[in-house]
Image 1: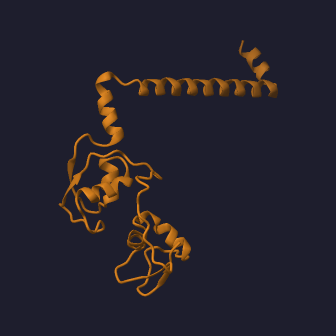
Image 2 (image 1 turned 180 degrees about the vertical axis):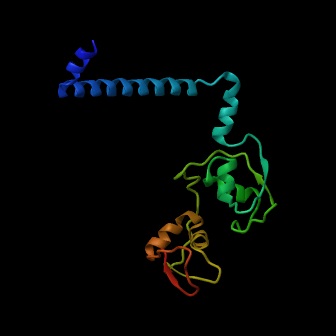
Image 3 (image 1 turned 45 degrees about the vertical axis):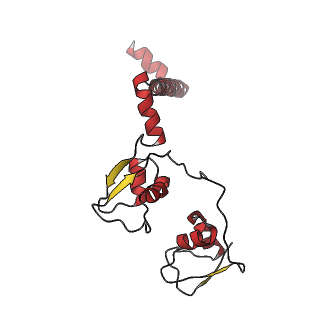
Length: 182
């Protein structure tokens, strides 16, 4: 029997067929495994439905968080709400005037808000405020974010200001520079 098997496998076409057959079996096995695994993951018991809904939308109730060394509002929102894009909600809930300055041990309220996704627009009612000449002179302590908030009513347009002025390092702007506002 071993001799017959050796004789059959000595043909290169037989080896190719064998490897292709094994590959097909493995691929089908992986697909079936993933299908079964996905079906089990989506079928949550009734008692866990509420918990899963809370995780998807953020925490059910406002909680508190103690700031640790090296944390930012983004990282805090990412770990507590599930999306760094909710950092503005944490900032607003705590009435922070300077979100870049957090102190170790500081207690922050984490609001019960829906998890934000990238590109999600909260409201189209932001009033666009812009100088008539379309220019802005950088003041001491300005950042592109602050300039965007002051001129457009939202900080999320800072990238447009950077592109319009060919700014390669958005953290490096100088007092007295005149920026073109898109």
